Length: 150
Image 1: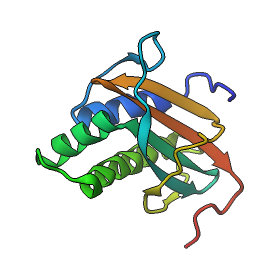
Image 2 (image 1 turned 180 degrees about the horizontal axis):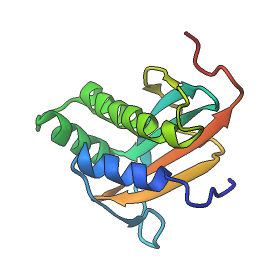
Image 3 (image 1 turned 180 degrees about the vertical axis):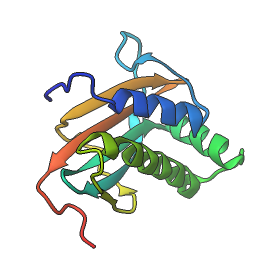
Image 4 (image 1 turned 30 degrees about the horizontal axis):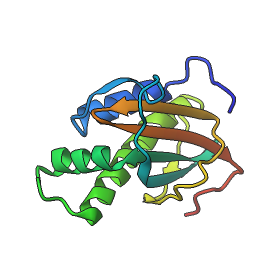
């Protein structure tokens, strides 16, 4: 993974989880404490001047808390939990893509899909955060042009 200096991914991830899911982050997921395994993942592909995808991977407790908070439903089932993580991935990707190219660049986003959990894709940028009692990994991966077709 090549670090991207001053890349906005971290800011976008934190603001999306805090503003949309009402879940607060506190440090990185690997600050020395135990780490919860990621159990749910959503991917949003994008195409434009740069093409690629954003994967959002999270532990069970983060996904369940996001669903409860976003849907105001304490009994959100597994399908609604995936819908919550998919919407977070969609918002993160949508808020991130304008910073990837020229000011007036146009990007097309695909609908969120389930992403494979293992292995984690090599990323051009990655953020791993502790969220509430779990963890979140968000990866930005650039691919060949035309990752999303009309």
